[in-house]
Image (tube, rainbow, N blue to C red; front, side, top):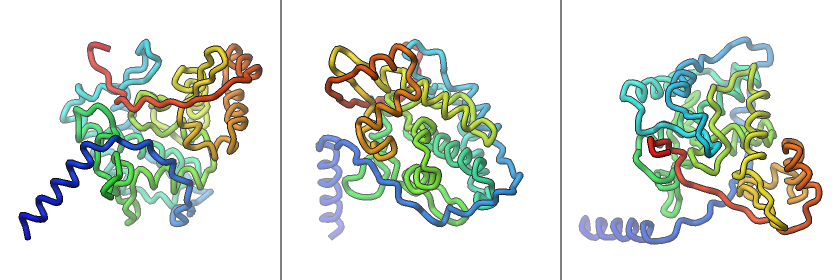
Length: 281
């Protein structure tokens, strides 16, 4: 019986290794009502200084590609421990007692710091999609794995993005805040989100991404958009015209002029390669 079980397990692993990685289906925002509680009068502030130090040391923000890259290969054991300790402190927070702005910053920082830790735990890796730790035979990536415990609840990256941030705040700029450690993703910001800077950073992230080739570019009669605007079209007006109206809000004058006059076809793309910095960059 034991030998038969091993053979079946090996067959499943072989099938998963040989099958092409499917295009991810976009999770719908499904409210986890447990996290609706908040205290509008709360003055509690979460300390994100450890995350600030980590970003300051390892995030490269001047790469010619325009992508903020993480120096995963250069993270010291001491600084990885710093990151782990920061995540432990966040898990001790009483999130339900925070005000809304503090909560929003908390969840975005938690998502981003956990994503970096996951990559470090499995580095070297070409893409976060190859970190196959989510439950389910045909699940890909780490997003479904319950890796944190907040106020006694086990929480995954998918929970943070699609069951907490998107449905509670209904702010499409969240997509410019959370970072999936990929070249195609909006930039990981070089400083933590806080209640004071969250709107400024989300606006900055939106402008950076929309005006980068990763976000939108027009060549002739073809508009190429990030797949984010396809996967999560429901957050951007529920139509391609709604997406274009969103882009116009952040587009620089040259891109805005092209978008206003655009009458061609739209395609989507996304680069899942790791946002990894090496000395050859």
